[in-house]
Image 1 (spheres, rainbow, N blue to C red):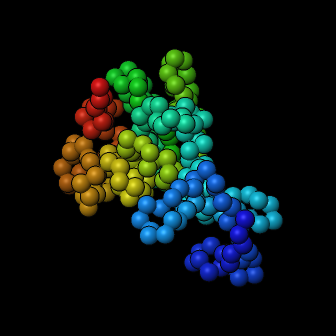
Image 2: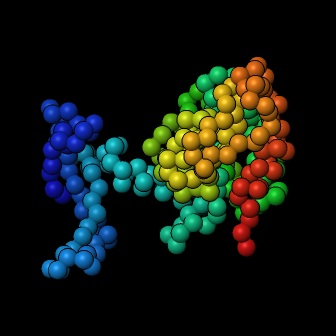
Image 3: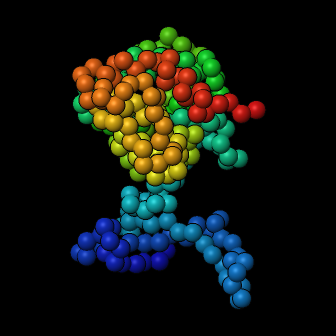
Length: 239
């Protein structure tokens, strides 16, 4: 590998621990078609020089971890994507913004019946273990349905997974914003704040008047049927 100074890249390494190593991926080599002189281009991974472990802030390492997640769920293979999948943001810091495990489970089950080709990836944080457990319990009544992929705690991996997804559905607007940032459509379950409208990729349900947003219990008035109808409209099955 090639040693370099990681402290020269903003946000990577402090100067007292700045040694980093570039490891060449020889399988990535190709001849650049634009240079007048024949030039070989290669991709590299950034690793810790002492341990050889992938550096956590290396974008290529993050993409490889996301790919490993998707392969483990059989959503992609060496030949490409095997199933379309949708990301669900199931968490929320405040209960008035939380749609709930029962409704998310009903949505997943309804989507499976309507579009059995579509898979689900749940994006969750450390505070969401209870809702994950409840969703698993609800879905255990459908043993033939593929288990959702669960992305925990790693926001960088979540971004990479969302970039390969059909889109995003959820009550977590932070993840909704990330979905838009990676160019994917997002259906927001808005209740305590008015729907975001800064991008044509953001979609809403149009269930409530503007004056209703912020009222207690509004999130629980969003029906599973309304969300499922919107999901099937936004992401219809393609033959």
